[in-house]
Image 1 (cartoon, rainbow, N blue to C red):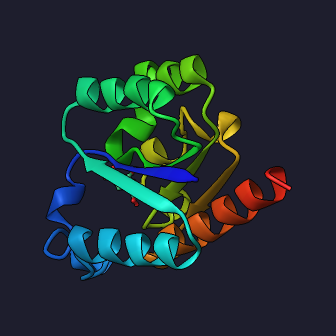
Image 2 (image 1 turned 180 degrees about the horizontal axis):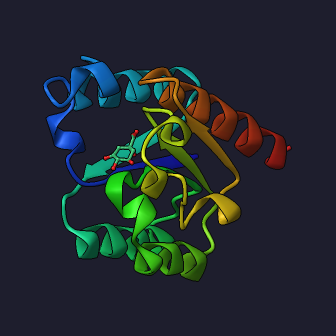
Length: 148
Ligand code: DQA
């Protein structure tokens, strides 16, 4: 199967961005780890980080024609603002997992609401970079069960 990992705005700064909140792992580290994890399980991974909402929307639209089986998505600040990204995911109907490095529920009130959680397969937050690994593990297990 092919799994797409999408990273929203400011996640290109991981490693140096508020390390007390987001840790010191860089985005390259995360992408490399996930690529290895997917390949070890016999699957393929693609990824994109963008600071632009429209780029993420267009990548989601393209995914529908590219045989992407599921998406792992950290929408970052767009989590709390983007009806357009929510609609893009609903529009293509590709199952997705929502991931946040930090525990958004222990932070400012404006981070408590997500435009994605009620339509995601599952949501992981507060576990740092490991959250992506757990989401990928869940995605792979689900894809393998569905293909039996
Ligand atoms: C985040 C949480 C969001 O509230 C924030 O805007 C981010 C990152 C996280 O991974 O913890 O940019 O999605």
